[in-house]
Each structure stands twice: as C-alpha cells, then as structure tokens.
Length: 95
Image (cartoon, rainbow, N blue to C red; front, side, top):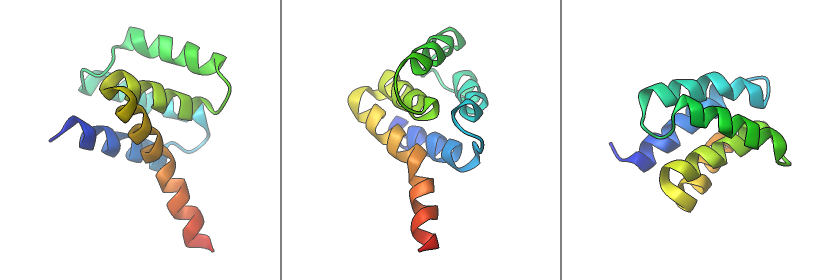
C-alpha cells in the first residue's frame, strides 16, 4: 500500500473517531508512531509543543505537521484534508 494512501486513511480515521477536539488526536498519533516509521514518540512530543504554540486548532496543526514530516508539502496537504474531510461530509449531509 502506498504511503499516500496510508496517510490519508490514518488521518481520515483520526478525524472520524477523535471526538473532543485536538487533544483527542494524540492517542491516534501515538498509534501511528508505533505502526509506521513516519515519526518517533520523541518527534511526537515536538509536534505537540509546536502545535500548541502555533495559531489554529491543535489537531489540524498536528495533522499538517505529521503529514509534512512524512511526505513533504503534499503529505501536509492530504493529511490535513483527510482529517477535516469527515466533518465536511457530515456537515453537507445535514443540509
């Protein structure tokens, strides 16, 4: 399976099940750190610190950073879109 597809799948899953805001994404990111060589637990700690210090939602910042660390700019874009896509789908389904 390609890295792009795995990245999209993992962040789509995170967006679907991480209910409760950005900190709810941390367990999913910890799972990714154990399953894939995208980032280590030490790098995850740095991601959390960077995400906390930048403006915007922490979950979105962490998805963008993790995607960027994995596949560069393309990874940052697709991981961010995958994370928020489920909310977009749910919102459009309501109207």
